[in-house]
Length: 285
Length: 338
Image (tube, rainbow over all chains, first blue to last red; front, side):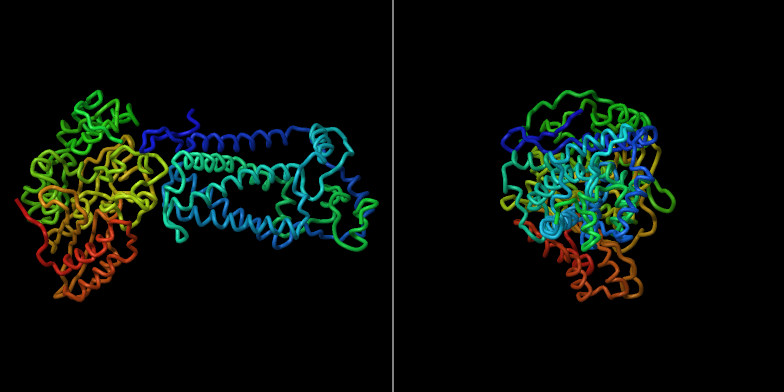
């Protein structure tokens, strides 16, 4: 299977031109395979969640928390859905023609790309200054949680740390998205002078043929990776046991019980005043 | 870059005697076969060694693809019918003179003797960057060498460019669209008929193809309905060399008069985009109006709305405007007959 496509420059040099579209089918297949494998695993595995009795006890201990706990502000939700719409338009306009559905896709593609770029720039500012920036990242501090999650999935009764605001899978997914989305946006913006837009005089000679080839290949690799990533994201969004997270992204809130069942209150203190104080670990103001 | 050599690359030559056999061959060698009609376009590719098919399927022995016959009140022209035969056919001359004019303006008499109507409508673009063997968008690459600040793009598109700015070079194509023709295509899944207007596809839809033919499909015939038989036709082709050249722009119109006014009209220009461009808005605007200078001016102005020029092809805007004006006026055009 070819992974890359090559062409000849006017000077007779071999240059990269694209990724092979075989990779699109590979990514699509990998995404579907993942969803089948994970769904089968969820049917037969002994993964364990916090028990009802355990959650009851926690709920009794946290009666001071509000019934509805805000998980995503309206601004964050608007960003998420704008980004999701742009991403779907980008993927459909990029890959439907590859799959044989022919239509004039370029204009829709670059407009959606600019919407995605704008939404992500907004997100970076919003997350940096108005949200808990580090809550979505994963790092060495999360190793105990990773270990506990794996053991729970294997059916062990592990008291170890629960996630903060975002489940571990969510944070890992975000990390993968950061790399792929930034790659696709960075290369996509560079590619804008290659097509007709109101912003630039078209100039394909901005870089050398070889540099363009690398740009196209990176754009393509990030694009096909996003196919698999988006399949995985949609799959988790519609899984029954994850539906509460999806609902939170629509309505903005989760119930107190969901908060206590799935999160470590000390890692995600909520509210203000007595309610927040009750969820914060000792010593944290 | 293309290097023209005297000897074309070796290939296996098949000369099937039926369309079904030809389709079976194309299926068997999908992706590695070249369909040969008159050979005038194909031989360029082979001589330039830019296409090296393993197999060439020559359609010239398939009798059912030859000839002009009356059918359903109109005519059906076999795709392998030479252009000269189309030009000389009495029904074409009597009822569909626009096709006669267009076919007669294709290249030279020798080429019209060898070239077929199916080949003329299905030929590849003449963009020299593409035909020079450069890995442009149309050749599967990621660049259009003709649309750069330094490109030589005098012959290229002013409409509907989508990364690639190549144009359709056919003379008979706009005449067939004006006549509301249908293209009969046969392939492994059977026969399908598409309107001439939908036969050609632009780069936005598929940047590597000029028409809707799939790899194992063959254009077998062109059906022209009787709807526009005997209408008032106009065809004009502007080219650099009057004796033998591809069009810089050509225009075809079919108009049915309604009293002293224009009734229905079909108006098509070619060599300005990757597909023949039917000017539907102009057709609607001129319906019911008198065929005079005022209507012609309005039509000419409307025809160039949305044109986007390149560095060297700005002249095509006034050219289209004036050709459309002339088509509406119906004044004597640049046609000639042999």
